[in-house]
Each structure stands twice: as structure tokens, then as C-alpha cells.
Amino acid sequence: MVLSVNKLSPRKIARMGLLMAAALILSWVEAVLPFQIPIPGVKLGFANIITLVVLYQYSFPTALLFGILRVLLSSLFLGRLSGVLFGLCGTLLSVCGMAFLKRCRCFSSLSVSAAGAILHGVGQLTVASVLLTPSVWTMLPLMGISSAFCGIITWIPLKILGRYEVVFPSDGGKSLNKD
Amino acid sequence: MREKVKIWDFVLIAILVALCLSVWFLPKEQGNTVSISVDGTVVAVKNLDQDAVVDLSDGTQVLVENRTVRVVHSTCPDHLCEQMGKISACGQVILCVPNRISVEIRGEGVDGLVG
Image 1 (cartoon, each protein chain N blue to C red):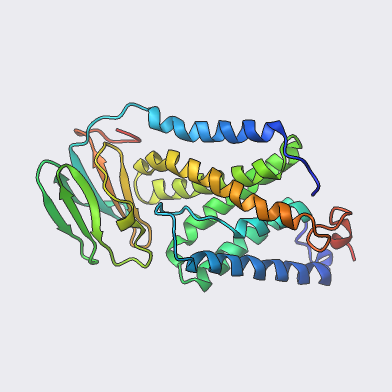
Image 2 (cartoon, rainbow over the protein chains, first blue to last red; image 1 turned 90 degrees about the vertical axis):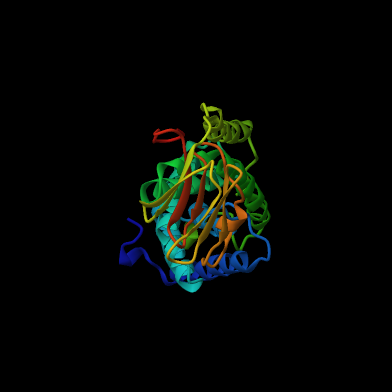
């Protein structure tokens, strides 16, 4: 697997550190924005851009680890430990779903991003239905629409980032894994 | 990363949104009672016909008024539960994730997903 020590090149560690820092900054920016969507658990999800970058550049296990670490660290930084289970389940489902769709090859990053956002919401609702009440599923339509919308919005900066060699090397990131 | 958006993207997004929306078309019935739970345990059940104010031990205040229910005051940091507004139909919920509170409208003795 990717996590074996000998495969963790200094370059990869440095890049992952940078990407993690970027993701945490995005989570923070999102948390201090003056406007919030009045549905629990629904956020724009800018940090998901970085998870997508990791997924497209590295591999599914790396993206999964990155996503889980990001949720843990951002909830520590933002002091929102109450939401950590929700975030973890959401991220787990969304990264798995996004990796699957990416593998299908008939979908572009647009639907990968949108489906990831929707699955994140579904994951959160799953935790809520277990911890709180099964009736939370009535929020699914609202959550689905707003998540799809957010997923499409966050896809735009990803598309812009995709033009830059620094973020997405033209060899598909193969050189990043070795070295 | 130089991929094009494909027709399948829109098909997939449309299907996923439609799946989410389908919950809306499940039969709805009028709610009769509101049950307030903390950490999954019901702490209060109120009849919707009677206006009432429910004070929870952590300072959260739930108002029952004209067959609608809303959270008027909360001690949580984000106050999303207050912004969720009023609920009145069976199965609707207001959640306060930081305080683990759920406010849920129920029908007559019916329990479960939407009913």
C-alpha cells in the first residue's frame, strides 16, 4: 500500500504537508465566512477541492488518509469536536464514492466533485440517523440539492487549478510518487 | 487533468439529485406530537394543539406555536438550529448537532422514517 514507509518520499511528505495546510486554511476560511447555509452539515466544502487534488494526483488510499486526517485536524483547529463523527463518516463515504467514479472513466471531475459532496451529506445523515433520530432522512432532498450545488461550485476552482503545472504535473503525478 | 465534462456527468448528477428528491414524494401525514430528544433519548413529548415552551436542561428553548415548532434559543456555537425555522409536517426534524438535540414531529403513534 501507499502508506509503507519506503514509498513515502520526502517530496511526497512535503507536498502532502502543503496540501494539508491549504485544506485547513480553506476549512478555516469557510468557518469564518459571515454567511452560512442554515442546514446542519451543509457547507460549501472548499476543502474538498484539496481532497480531489490528492485523489487525482496520488491514489485512493492516500486520498482517504488525507481526508480523514483533514477532518480530525480541522475539527481540532476549529474546536468543533462535536461534529467529528459526522465529518469522518461523510468523508469516508465521499472519498470512496469519488474514487469509484473516477475509476469508472466515463465521468469527469465535475460529477466526481458533485457526487462526493452528495455522498458527504449522506454519510452525515447516516451518523445523525443512528445517533439522533431516523427522521433526519427527511432532510435528504434539501441536503442533496444543496450538496450537488456546492459540489459544482467547488469544482470551478479545481478546474482553474488544473491548468497549473505545479498542482497537476503533466505526467499525471507519476514523478511525484517516486523520487 | 485536461478532461472534458461529459454527458454522463449530467446524467449522474441528475440521477443522484432525483434519488434525494424522491424522499419528498413519500406520503406525508399531518403531525400530531413533537418529541424532543437529547442524545437519542426522548426528554419531552408535546401535543401540537397546545402552545408551549419547552426549556431543556442545557438552556435550549423550543417553542410550540400554532401547530408549528421551532428552536427559539440555543447554547450551541453556530445557532443553525434556530435558523432552521419552523417545522410542522410529520417526520420533519430540527437538529442541533453540537448539543445532540433533535426535535421531531410525529404522527399518531407512528414511528419510523417519514411517518
